[in-house]
Amino acid sequence: MTLFDLLFLASILFVLVCLIAIAISALRSRFDRLRRWAKLLGVYLAAHALALILTSLLLPRRIYSPGERRCWDDWCTTARAASIASNSAMPPCLSTPGTHMWIAKIEVSSVAKRVSQRAPDARAELEDLQGTRYQPCTASLAQGSAPPHALSDPLGPGDSFSVLLPFQLPANREPAGIVMHHGDFPGVVIIADDSAFLHRRALQRIAIALPN
Image 1 (cartoon, rainbow, N blue to C red):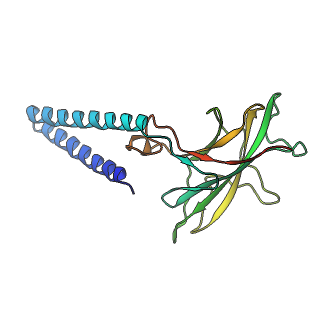
Image 2 (cartoon, one colour):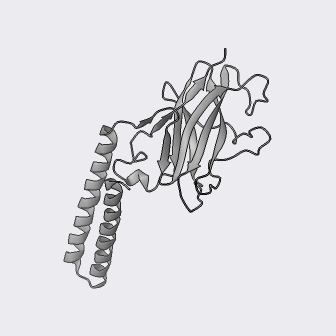
Image 3 (cartoon, helix red, strand yellow):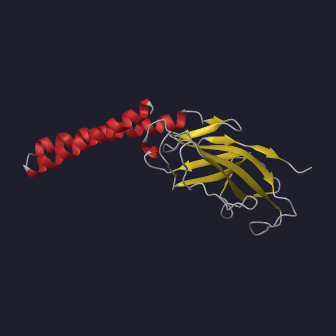
C-alpha cells in the first residue's frame, strides 16, 4: 500500500464525516453550519481533483520490461511474448485483408501465501508501436489439449497459468506491449495510481517473434 492509497482512505473518511455533519445540520435546521461543512467539502473535493489531474498529466508513464511481473496486491501478470499466427493454424478471428493475427501470451500468477483469488474485471489490450490499442478479437485460445484459460480464472496460492489472446493488427503495425486493466475503481480517483483519471496506463512491453 502506497502513501497515496493511505491518502485515499483518509479522504473517504473525511468525506463521510463531512456528509454526516451536513445531514445532522440539515435535520437540526442549522443552515449556517450546513453551509460551512458543504463549503469545506467542496473545497477539499476541488483540491483533490486538481491534484489528481495535475499528477496524472505530469507523471511519466510506467513502463515494464519484457518478462517483468506487475502485481496488484497478490494478483500479477507478465507479458511473455507475441507472435504472428502461422498460416497452418486455424485463424481464431475473421481474416481481413491487410492484417496480421498476433497471439499474445500473458502469464497470470499469484504471490499469495494462503488464499485463492481471481480478478473478474481483468482485461488486456495490445498496444502497437504507434500507440494504438486493440481489443482481443475473440476469447482466449486453448493451448494444446488443455482447455483455454481466461484472465479472470481463479488462482490458488502461488499458482500460475498462461493465457493466449488473439489480436488483429494492420500488416504494417507491430506490437509494443500489453496494457492491462484491473478495474477502474478506486484507482481512477487515487492520486498517482496507474489507472488514475487522465494518466496513461502502464505498458508491459512484450517480446515479439517476427516471421522468417
